[in-house]
Image (tube, rainbow, N blue to C red; front, side):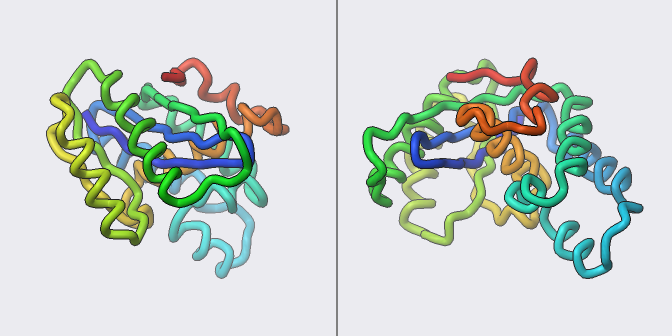
Length: 191
């Protein structure tokens, strides 16, 4: 099993979410099929280059909603399990140390929910001490085979979970105007 992890937040809450799949190959095939299905979209070569380098949720949410919907539809074909845990902020001040501690706590809750052993893959933070703290805390949990930090540009599963995080955030904040959540809700479980 593979568990791809990302996080998102707004002024009210902080969310860590995981995309759990049986094999990494399923994710790669779904990603490639998704890319092929949108290859002929009518946008400039420059925009296409930016978009196809990394399918960031901020860009898809803002500018390419139909592409986001297509991505979500492709994801449902691999029958993923989408787990997330949410921390409700007590005030708008949410310093880095607090955010790091909450991230590890929420990630641990997700990992402890797994029935099978898994390899955890998370998006790098470019903050080595925090990345090492994540690895040290999570690899202690008995159902983890390995935990790896990877740049999301290089990992299809991280691009998928980035977009799933934004779907969950939009849904929880009641701002999901395009009903992204309805495309994947039967695969989602809050921890």
